[in-house]
Length: 124
Image (cartoon, rainbow, N blue to C red):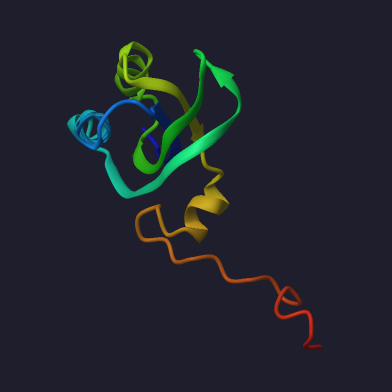
């Protein structure tokens, strides 16, 4: 199997406490780890306003996780997030290999060098 990089956004109900939000994030990390994957970064964005009401609410607590794992073994994570009562929405995307390498997520990869002429626009 091929190792791939993913980005997972989770929106948790605004009414749950910080401990419940942390429990959701910890459970996702456990599920990824069981299959041999890693979660290099967890970025907590905090409370944000929705573009439109979801379940009669207008705010949620956002978190974004970067996941590095073998392709195809995130089904259990997706299932957990669909069934979790505290999770309002989640979105899992596979990062393109070039973006994953730029972020340094793929093993042994160096961040991609900028192409010639893509530097500072003020320099020639």
